Every structure is written in structure tokens, then in C-alpha cells.
Image (cartoon, rainbow, N blue to C red; front, side, top):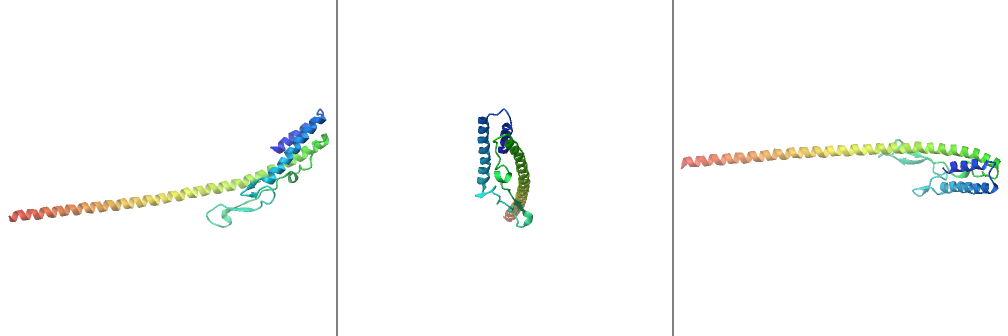
Length: 188
């Protein structure tokens, strides 16, 4: 967005109808945007580590439950500052400089877009690994639930069996008591 705004300003600076004062104002905004690119590049951090200083290269992240290269995603982020993307020495002092700045800004936009595409591909790898991990977690949770459900069914069956045996024993005991009472009555 900053590069796009710098390009708009450079295009305005190529106009022959622009006054010296307007050109100076455009130059101030242009330089401020260029400095802002450097500020963002030098201060963007993740986990306390600078991301856009060119040193965030081949950082491996484990994305699975096991170690090994099949469960790792490598992340690299290019350096982002006005010097690296090629707009560090551009100015809008006159129409010639402004036209040269437009060419450099277009190249910088292409370079940043290429970096963004690379980062997007890496992000897609991380998201795919995350989705895979979530699916694995859901499957493990479901299988654990099935195991618990199976245990409940087995225990319910065991309890029913025990209750039937207890009722049968009580019934046999009752029958035995009735038979012995009938025998006693006959003897009387």
C-alpha cells in the first residue's frame, strides 16, 4: 500500500502543471512513506525475532506429532526495506527523477508481490498442516469416545447379567422356602 501511494505521488510529480511548492510537499510525503517502509521492515517481530531484516531464513517449524523432515515446514522471509526493494535513492525533485522513481517503484511492487506470493505459499503449508492436526485430533477424540462408549455398554451388560442372577437366586430361594414350608405343613 505504501509503494502504491508512492507511485501515485510520483505520477503526480510528473505533471508539468505542478508548482515547486506542491512538488516539495509531494517529496515530503514520498520520503515519509519510504522511511515508513524501513521502519516496518526493521521493527516487525514474531516471538521476539525480527522477521523482515533478511535473517529469518529456513526456520523449520514442527507441524506434526512426530519429529522428522516429513513433519516440518521451512519458512523464509526476504529482507524488506527501501534499499532491498530498490526505492531507497529515489526522489521527486523534477519530472525526470519522478519518472525514474515510477520505474523503480514498479520493480519494487513486483518484488514485494513475489515475496507476498512466497509467504502465501508458506502460509498455505502451515494452514494445511494445522487442518491435518485438527482432523487427527478429532479422529482421536472420536475413537476415545468409541472406546468409552464400548466400556459403558460392556459394564451395563455385566450389571444386567448380575441383576438377573440375583433375581434368579432370590426366586430359587423363595421357591425353596415355599417347598420346605409345604413339607412342614404336611407333617403337622
